[in-house]
Length: 483
Figure 1 (cartoon, rainbow, N blue to C red):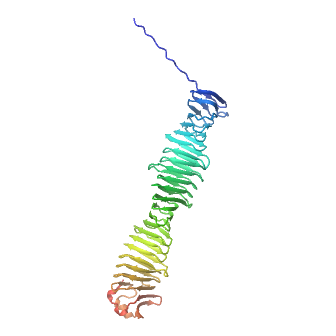
Figure 2 (tube, rainbow, N blue to C red):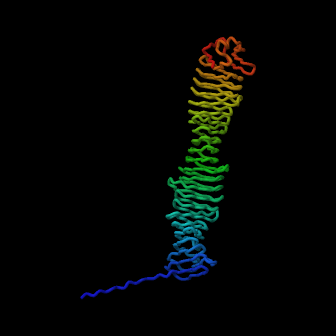
Figure 3 (cartoon, rainbow, N blue to C red):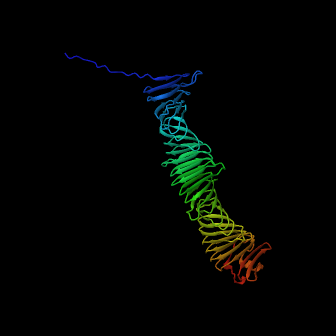
């Protein structure tokens, strides 16, 4: 008969080390694998305190409630696993690691420098410098404290990092970053998932990264193929140093130094652009923005923008739709393509295609416009027009020099004091039918006379049109239209 036998199995019972509220314990032994439980403040008692003078704790350390303290005083690097929130951790040796998990609503605070901290569904304050913080899994938040000369590193995505007047290197995307004035952040490897940075009077560097920066008075360096969005400057201008970057301005004020940037701006945004001589120009897409152009080669699409350009700048405008751009400046080189532009200044050199311009003032500094089938308005201004089949509208004391044929010149009931030089017999003068109903009526009125080498059409003492170098007798009804 076979006998049944039972082999006894050894059961190991691990007794946790409990540090209750109101107690303080100091350990001095070689090693322990027992779990440690540190209880927080309760019923008027301070949280439990555990001090490790020597040896190593291999077991997990768990905080139950806020106020508990664990202090490693061995001055030897070690690895720890912490659970629960509200505790305070002191690490004496650099090179230690601390895994902090499941803090719940209570933040854990860690003091140490040169440590590695891993967060797993945890919130932690990390005080010191040269620390590496990793967002492992779950929702994580870290608040970093130190001095401006110390650099911490944060790696991971979808976390929150608060930088308190120190320097931090953030690697990963879709993070939310908060920085106090005087902080410096470097953002890397967002991999298309933009970080969002809130702060004012900070320095930030993007290395082929994507970020949205909210706040004013910031300095941002965008290196490589970075994408930067700026918002919420509240009148306190940001400064950006970038080349070949994509920059979005969302109702913000920004100074940009660099070249070959692609810039988009919403209505109400302001930008001031600088670039070194010989570099590729910036490209701006904006509607209702204010743009200061300082020695920059600039292309702007969109309408309703105001541009203030330094002398010698080159500006290309296109696609304004029905919204007029306005340009203030003198001796600016302007290229227009399907654009509407109001020009305040003189000495401009304009190349136009399928565009309309209105010139204001600067009679002493005539501008030059070249192009055909364009529309030009003169309001107390002087320009030279090169091209054919253009239409020019006059008001005030304006002077037009023409080098082309088949032009149309339009005058309101009040002629102002207008002068046309270079008039060709293929050109057409449009006068108000309220002044003269026809060419015959004009001729019979005696208001068209020969004055020296010029033809002068006079409505009254304040309204005259002078055609320089034109004989009145050579004009026929074919050169006039009345409406």
